[in-house]
Length: 98
Image (cartoon, rainbow, N blue to C red; front, side, top):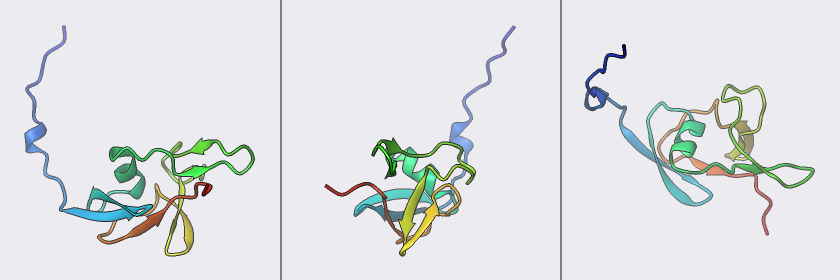
């Protein structure tokens, strides 16, 4: 038999909200969360294009092994799953510009 547990989501305490930009658009996040988590939560799933066929790529392993979620931060290409969100961070996708 399954015992139902009352909804306790209102008791969750989140870190303070911060904002960063992704390809020029403002994205809300919570201080200390991974960049990939914030991007996925805000609907940004296409982070780069595959070099050979141009297919859309995004988060896959979410622990820094596959490098599918790489983005550009301050000129450096980094795995977004291993980068932490900070207020004012400027993030750029690695999509082919058309």
